[in-house]
Length: 463
Ligand code: IMP
Ligand code: MG
Image 1 (tube, protein in one colour):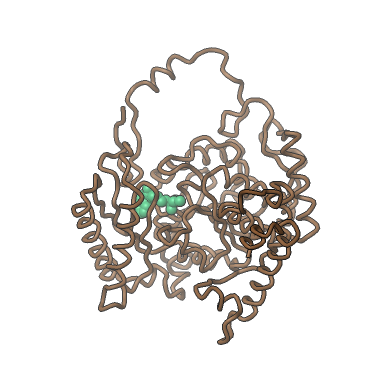
Image 2 (cartoon, rainbow, N blue to C red):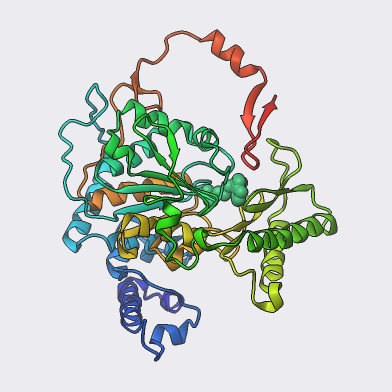
């Protein structure tokens, strides 16, 4: 529909109406979700999924077009990425009311052009920031790699993003990192990967109640941890009256209901596919088997010898095929996720659908009040599964995550507090910029350093 309008040079007059039409189709589809009669949208797109909220697409398009003037273009159509941005915006707007939306957008533009800055008090907590009801999602789950930090890197220093996560926690929002990276309950491995964020929380003196709202789900849905009052992660008990496995036994796909035999059959099949693919395609890669996953990763830990996207996708699709064929075509009988992680490929037992659903059930939050933010929404990606149980935002890097959070906070009525007085060292503490060269530090950095192999969790020496 947009292509026609572009070719006929009528986007300027029809663009907003077209988005409104999509909006109507979605509303109609939502109303008919439980009816045996397919909606008009379903007839047009038979594979269409669930919409957990309405999507104010006209407002989103108008706000985006006001800023980026898409409809003034004569030679370049509205692109896939721009559609992704508009849909993201509509999804965030769905949590807010219309008047606030329009005000927030004029504010964001003013703020960007004037470069206004945040004032922080000396104790690091913002003066005058009122904590009231948060008009936005009650649970925001984040993918890790490429959403909060670059692929294979760690959350070391990103004060802007750390501050936004801190602000969400302070306003009563439950924040969870739901990542495929799994190191069982080796707490220090996860802490290593988000050390900058934890340091930021500590320097800001997040209260025990606020810390309590921060979760990390490792291995998609296998290892649940929570932030303690001492800013260290602690495993949430699995069994017993407050155990998360006990509490989620009624969810069919919960790990509480998996059998060890099914797990090992699934991993055997995945391992055979991965090993065969490495040898047949002559890949510079190795296979790893963990308790709940099988990975195809670059040969040398730490050195990112690239495996081509094509080879990784081929591995993923072969794994899908092999798993589907298990038990005479019944599949492995467990939720799973085979995905291309950008530099590696994995088959995990469990997936983010189960991870997000467990958090929702454990925290008593409905899908309409949840949001999952991630970068892997192709059918070879691992955030894709979360779409079944939660509204989602598709970003492509941590900078886009920051932009999304800024918009969420704006729409929730929270003033921007992104920038700091003084020189922030990225840890949340206000420090003086060093006036001399630190030779000890230079020496330390130039020597071989110990780093963690993000695939296995082993410490390796790097030069
Ligand atoms: P996510 O984007 O936060 O879900 O993390 C995905 C990345 O975690 C993968 O691309 C891997 O580099 C890394 N990873 C480490 N261990 C595992 C594992 O056991 N399963 C899947 N991914 C893992
Ligand atoms: Mg990711």
